[in-house]
Amino acid sequence: MQLSALRIDSSLISTPQRCFNRPNSQIDKAIVPKFVYCGTLSRGIICSNAKAVAPSSSSPSVVEQPKGGDVLDRVGMLSQVSGVLGCQWGDEGKGKLVDILAAHFDVVARCQGGANAGHTIYNAEGKKFALHLVPSGILNEETLCVIGNGVVVHLPGLFAEIDGLESNSVSCKGRILVSDRAHLLFDFHQAVDGLRESELAKSFIGTTKRGIGPCYSSKVIRNGIRVGDLRHMDTFPQKLDLLLSDAASRFKGFNYSPDMLREEVERYKRYAERLQPYIADTVHVINDFIGQKKKILVEGGQATMLDIDFGTYPFVTSSSPSAGGICTGLGIAPRVLGDLIGVVKAYTSRVGSGPFPTEDLGKAGDLLRFAGKEFGTTTGRPRRCGWLDVVALKYSCQINGFSSLNLTKLDVLSEFSEIKVGVSYKCIDGTPIESFPGDLLTLEQLKVDYEVLPGWQSDISSIRSFAELPRAAQQYVERIEELVGVPIHYIGVGPGRDALILK
Image 1 (cartoon, rainbow, N blue to C red):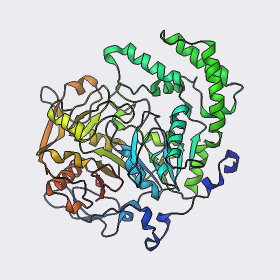
Image 2: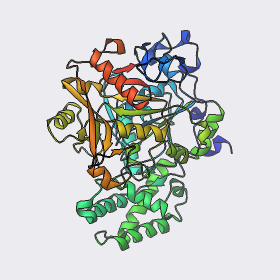
Image 3: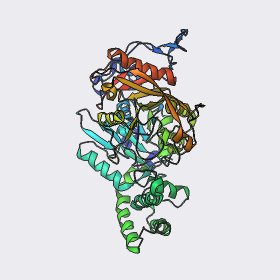
Image 4: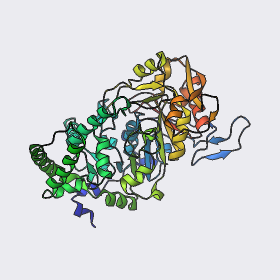
């Protein structure tokens, strides 16, 4: 099949070659954020593309990092197909890294989740954008944004985002593709989400009530409606009637009538017309781009500890935000996946119900919440906060095989004289727990062993070099690397695009 048959603008196919394809001397420095690369040694870490040195007696191994250069020394080595995924319970700051890296990729793609994702990014002028469905690469003018088949799409929300971007001079025309295989999330899914939470009473999940779970339920029981169905409005009413009737039979509080069906059909006729230029066989498009050696960056929503299989079930999301979701959510082969970057806060937060071993219910938790502005992008709810959980982080790294980590919000810890790190779990009888448990009762009853590290109590938000960080801040980063066994290549010290240190 030719790409032209998919009604994709030719501008989407003939993506111009950008900085990563040029010699370093030809780089347009204007589009590369001015970060400082640190060529110092990391303790206890084996980095890819690095020359190993004989280990010392004080650490498992010592690795010599590449020397010199700027941001391209790190970013330029990323694989053709790379990914950015969350390590914790979401809200780690994935959107910022995706926004920064997007300038070096042809495509940024979402593979799972829906509008329950809330990615906050800032443009060069410092203007804030809160994205929920549109990939975070949209601020980079030459990047194509793809919403893959694994995403559930609420069209009113998607159009509202596009309108908001366009009103702020961010062009979306010809720059967004939506998979014809992606499932449609309707307003009634959101209503059902709320009714479901009410049914659960004290055992409620604490969802965003954006209809994500009910939409994935429709998909799995095989009565869902896909984006491609909008091309066949002659059969659309019957499919929607089946969906609405099913909801009405299940939930007494859901009032379904013929008028509701009629209004929804008319509304989706208008949506279908507007969405038509965006619809594409993205499985074909993505794989064609891979064959053309285009660079693709996958943006994960939510995070591994909310994974439907690997998270704190049932207090999880309804998709697979871990590495496996990339292949199923975009239709690409596992063998083409390269570097995966895990994004982790310097502390921990989560929204909604569920186990949270390192949660701090005292003054420290309150300070983390307000210093870190921990209020949900999607819901506005205050987030539960606590110390960094290394057990959960190692588990996340094991599942995803991260090649490096992005440690975010290090600056938030600047007010603490001492910083705790959860390094191991044990049962209430003192028996050590070897890995992150899947049993909910065990998670609720376990005890956490902490290491206490010195704080630095100074503002680090303007620092752009690892060598210039206070020694205590350097030690905190190095200790995490040592405990987890994965190098930290990116360190966030503020919300802005330039507030990033490359290590």
